[in-house]
Image 1 (cartoon, rainbow, N blue to C red):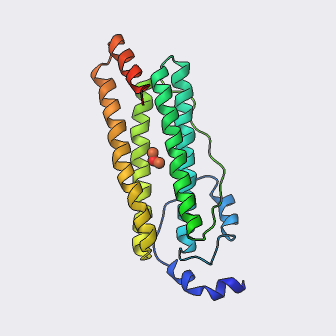
Image 2: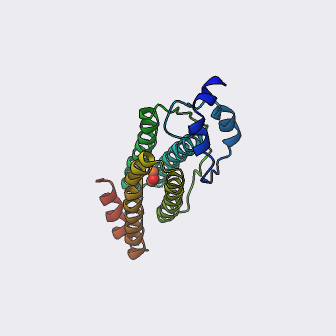
Image 3: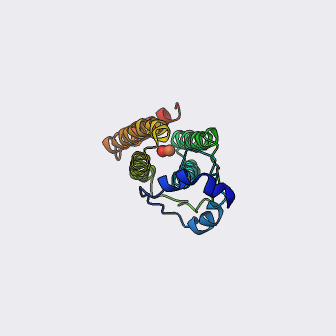
Length: 201
Ligand code: FEO
């Protein structure tokens, strides 16, 4: 535990701030948590919170990949394409957070990814779930921002601003598509055309 006492300043910073982590793989993660680096400006609490967010982003990726598979199964090729694109974006978010931790000499620990829903009643239901999910992710990002502020972790707070802006965009996009589908509800040609348009993403 020599390294721990040498970097006790980092330890003290961890005393403030809270983050909700709702992941059923948390206990496994907690066991690995002791391996997180002390030789970094980021507190252990912050490292843990960012690692949890990496898991959440990868879960989001898996959710959208699942929506893509179900959309393709239902014959909505454009929507299936849109969700594959979203799957890749979410992977990019996870990579961005992992890259940040690494640049701060902090450790990335990948926890298991929980199962996702595999079927939806309709493509509209997928976009309803997409918007609801993005609203949850926004709340998670804001919790991270609160933790960074409480810890006076200026570098992490600055990095998180990209995600704050990204969430505004993600919610706006999902809401726009959902409104589009609702506006043409019941019109087969309209639904077909909107699906085609989503394929151009
Ligand atoms: Fe990574 Fe869709 O938020």
